[in-house]
Image 1: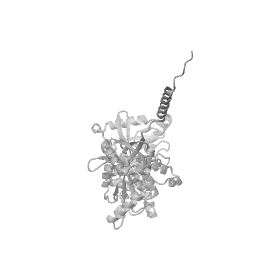
Image 2 (image 1 turned 135 degrees about the vertical axis):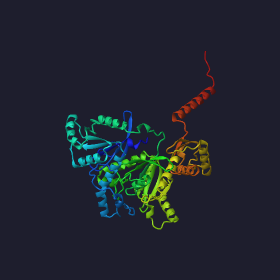
Image 3 (image 1 turned 90 degrees about the vertical axis):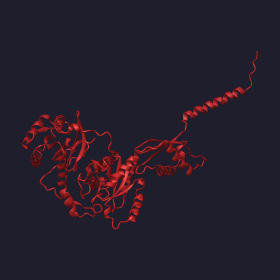
Image 4 (image 1 turned 30 degrees about the horizontal axis):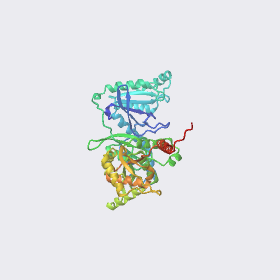
Length: 503
């Protein structure tokens, strides 16, 4: 459901105040982008926006993204050290920019402070900024980490000086959260236009952008939505959470775009010893699982690595439709038609497990061909949900068998397909009823899958073929053998001469 942005609540605080959907680690600066989530309380439904911790609001926001744009380098090796240090130094400003955007679209602002640490300089600066710029909005001051109800009241007293009425809560054990939600819902009901919100009955397809770090996943999402929805930086590991964004295409169709953290090799994550890095990779894999289409982003100037193939294996295993996105195509010198052909051959060879996925070439920096990603994703999503008629399906299978019959075994047996039906979609799953599934080799099964694709379509989506034997159960066979032996004994007994009776 797409809720009116004016009916949102923003979590704005000094350090980490994430919900269950966000990564929670006891270190500052984990949350960076805006995280959206649907929430319910009583009969009230609203959207919650989690933001990164605001350290200071005094820095200038202008020109930050332009200063950090590095598009012609491959990974981190080609980025100068000075540029990396500058990107890291400006990261707080980019996090604050995301928080400011969340405040602008929110109806209720939840200002979260640390009750155990007391008032700090950043709390005073944030409160002054809120009163000066957003006096027309409702601001709720939540004093977190007040686990004891009695002690919490004393901790909250110090925060009256910020100019808002403090409410002691504990996000860990839930103390005071019910009163907080009651207050939030009361303020939301006062917001104009709440009655005009309509629920979407149709499911919105989800498109997840995955790939190695620094291939341009966040840049592609920003180019699609036309705004700086996620933070873009040459520093690898900038994106940590899976960021959901509602997007409406030019044809009016709605999609959910999911930006994910760069998926690093498991050995690299373990050697780094970062809990946040491990959680980021898990969130990326979870985004693949909850998506309908996966856009596997690779960099044009970089070689396809073993890590790319492992991600491709995960996509195929989860049964998701896929579009291979070659980003930074503008960095390829002297491009022509042959360049595209040779590049596609290389991709098909190294990502052979996704040989059915279409390839889109784009450049997120100048916005070239990024809209083709949505068009390709819409096509493969429909193919993933397509059903094939039973008569057409059986005709395709019969023609495939007539062209290449199943090979005989050494014992002279040959597999026989009785009938075929489509059992499910998402991904398309077909059941072939045969005399004995063991008689069909892996080579012949791959042939049948390729023949089904070439004759029936299904581009951009994996398909599943299930081979089911029509063999009688062992207990039924044994029972029939016993009955047959009993009949033979009875016939033999009837053929014997009658015994003489002596008187």
